Image (cartoon, rainbow, N blue to C red; front, side, top):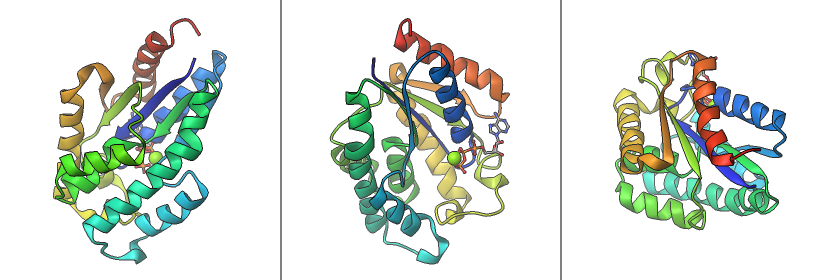
Length: 204
Ligand SMILES: Nc1ncnc2c1ncn2[C@@H]1O[C@H](COP(=O)(O)OP(=O)(O)OP(=O)(O)O)[C@@H](O)[C@H]1O
Ligand SMILES: [Mg+2]
């Protein structure tokens, strides 16, 4: 059966680590998995990712930034996510709509409701079955990085707003989220994720 799982959280929270471990486990129990990410996992998306994350792009108008992220999401939903779900696969995506609401809305101080509408419009209102939110203190996540991309360079207050907004999104729809403290041991987090995903898969 198809299933759409998303990993969200701040920079350096452990999203890629946990997405990879979940995808490995799913394949081990016989699922066909599409491992994917935003921004950038399409031909046009790779160009957009470069523009968005390269510090050399310099300051972008917050609305221009939001529109570029929206374009990546629209292409990615149509080119990667929907076809994989239609084939009956499990899609595991590293970031999705909530990242845009948290970063371009709360982070850049645009209206998060407007950004949410834009992001959900871009993906054609395709909801994940489960979002795993890895909640890391800013100093443990982006704060621990040395080589920061354009968004990671946005400053501590920006990243505090992003963190708070992710938590608010999860609190507003708790049945669709698994919120985990991101600096628990990797294996413990992976086990918690597997339990939730297995429950949604039924017997794989
Ligand atoms: N549970 C954990 N406890 C401590 N360190 C962790 C944990 N999970 C991942 N890490 C480490 O934190 C760093 C960031 O992990 P990872 O790349 O998975 O995060 P990410 O959220 O994908 O980051 P990015 O935003 O850069 O894509 C890595 O060095 C990783 O080994
Ligand atoms: Mg990552």
